[in-house]
Picture 1 (cartoon, one colour):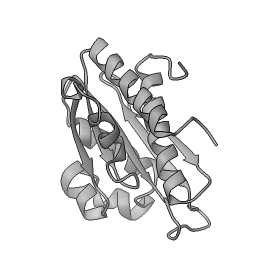
Picture 2 (cartoon, helix red, strand yellow):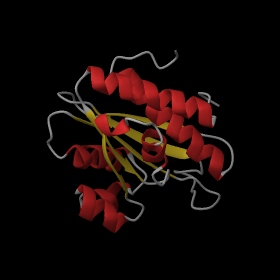
Picture 3 (cartoon, one colour):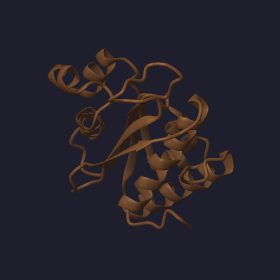
Picture 4 (cartoon, rainbow, N blue to C red):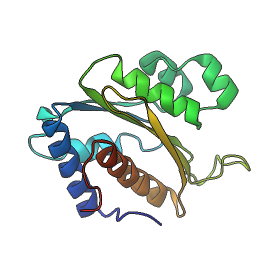
Amino acid sequence: MGADATDAALDRLASRVGEALLEKACVLVTAESCTGGWVAKTCTDLAGSSRWFDFGLVTYSNSAKQRLLGVPQATLAAAGAVSRETAVAMADGARDGVANRASVAITGVAGPGGGSTDKPVGLVWFAWGIPAREVSTECVVFEGDREAVRRHSVAHALGGLLRRLGADAGR
């Protein structure tokens, strides 16, 4: 099912993200939908995270995605909230042109309802914005209940951030 997503594993991932961000003189912002701020919580559970964590936004509704992150209504209408295009717009909106700001955006269908043939329960789009680089994306379909989908999404988001910062996510 993917990376270890226990509380202890998430804490270790967040700690390594913090180290990598400090090494690169960056700060992190999160733009979360289906994870409801869990990435931000995991990061800010760590003492000293204020040195590398800037802020987190939970943009659960489409109107919040538009207002707080600048996701175009046309993107939401054409691609939907759970899409590569929306994840990219969320990550870009969170960075807001700040040079040393890294971002992670997550949007998906955590379940148990809300899925469709095209976008089944467990489908999650991730986007990572690393300073001086284009936003990169991944789509994963996780198995399990709502808790499992969200927990594995947090682990995948942090692990993906580590890889994109050039740190070893498997350590």
